[in-house]
Amino acid sequence: MKKILFIMSLFFCAAKAGGATGSDREYWAGLCYRIASPVLENMSKGELVRNMEVEFSPTWDNRNSRVVYMEAFGRLMAGIAPWLALPEDGTPEGLQRKRLKAWAIQSYRNAVDPANPDCLLWSGADQVLVDAAYLAQSFMRAPKATWDLLDKTTQERYIEAFKGLRTIRPAYNNWLLFRAMVETFILWTGGKPDLFALTVALQKIEEWYLSDGWYSDGPEMSLDYYNAFVIHPMYTEILEVLEQKKIRTPINWKLALKRMHRFDQFMERLISPEGTFPAFGRSIVYRMGAFQTLALSAWRYGLAPGHTNGQIRSAVTATMKRMFAVEGNFNKGGYLQLGFAGHQPHLSNYYTNNGSLYLTALVFLPLGLPDNDPFWTAPAGKWTSQKAWSGEAFPIDNHQSVKQ
Image (cartoon, rainbow, N blue to C red):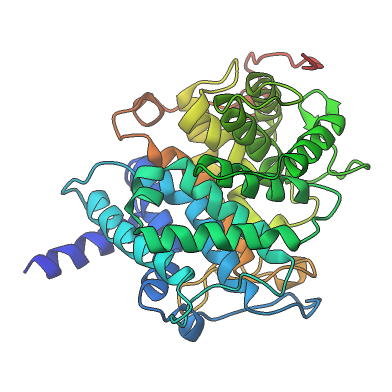
């Protein structure tokens, strides 16, 4: 009987993700479960490699195809770990969360177990550095629901795997932060980090700060969403840990946060009155990952000046619903398919597979707030473009250098 009730609850919340009426949180939780469950259920059984319906970009560069599974798992967990850290309860959402958490812990174990069919690729492709960084981020974002629940052998396997990534030479762009995140994780666990690698990475990111909340992704500016996918969140979170460990850094994390908040102001204004946003730049198939900074601010640091809970929740929810109402985002097995809104393989870059797409899960960070938090309980609010295009008063925007 309990099993039947559990299945009914999952069906109920999945229906919310499909467009039925309900609260914003019900919609977010249902969609998050829909995205996460095929990956975690299969990986917890050691069956992800066997069962995942894999899709590669038409211009795929033929790197080791096993990077797919590291990408899917690492990116997914970086987004949903805070949600899994909430206390257990008997609500439909709570039952979903409990099931995902159990699957996730076993998946973490399998990911570094050499005897498991789903042991992830930890060498042989530079790409693994990227998604190991997202795994490290998942541990540090919600340790009580992730790292602290792992047995000592599994923890030691992760530490050794992360140390083994030091042989990978990162690209001269946002990739420096992936190496820095791995070193920060090693420090966080009580180990000795490579302080030279950390210093170089953080100093270069600081040198690449342009102004007005934007970093250059390397020596040249690239107009895309990598400030949201990688740069602002990782830079801020790394600096915060290093400050706690009393390690000198180019700037303090509070200044990095001010810059991220300025970037948040741009991202909120990019959401149209209809709940769309511009499809420009690399990796647009990462979908809602473009709003990671808004999600991170809402969950952990507080919203940018001028933003309200109802405004940001309403804007992001409208965009999420607009995107995932389109047919083709998921394949028959329930895994994400290449595309921006629907199935559009031609939009993917040469490095993209459908494991890469789980970066969209980074938008779900606010689910880590309890359902009585003001982010979820505040009345719906109009976002800037809604006000602007309906003739209402809206805040003027001005350049901010945010240099210090």
